[in-house]
Length: 173
Image (cartoon, rainbow, N blue to C red; front, side, top):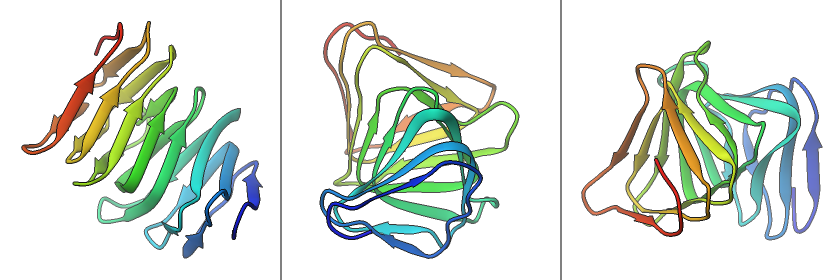
């Protein structure tokens, strides 16, 4: 995808290889179970957007040794990010709803690296279920009425030394 183009995947896709998404471009995943193997690497200044249209589930990596790389990822209500692998978000994660991990699938790790940015915003409920979230950058939690539920015995949110976790507004974790 180059420039301001948009590619929409509606159901049961397997994406492999690099995805170059230019500034203003977007890869929209809107339904089904879509698999991203470790060969999936997003480059460029565009974003990948998990949209609740059909309640998409994105399986990021099928083995614990897989690493799926996003430059920009937006997770919306009704969408699920799961998979055994590591999800590395180099630029930004905007989480306005939906779930990371599921109780019925092996769930891996989501990493915000040093210099990366993540934000939980809005009034939806974000669920961290049987997945580990590691922050090494700046993670903001904003909005009112925001709830983040951790369920499952293996959920963890790790804010490493040197990382920033910032809360504003009326929110809870």
